[in-house]
Length: 86
Image (cartoon, rainbow, N blue to C red):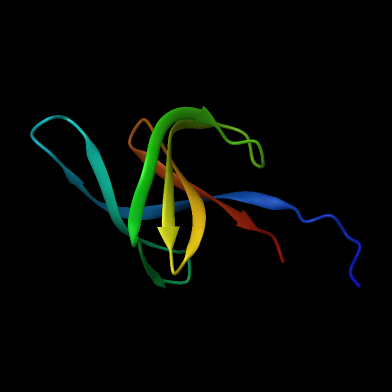
């Protein structure tokens, strides 16, 4: 069993999102550093919050991706995720 603590890094991503006429933003999909495209199945919540794993913050989107809950962050037009370091 691996007892090392998991470490995370802030990974900036290219985001495709819809900006609605009521002023809200709905992220649809994003591209990772290796050009993998990740589709967001559902947005559950959106609130102002900080990242506890990598620092920083802004608007935190709680999303479902392939059955797993994940966080996306948008801060002044830049999007990032908390990516596990290898």
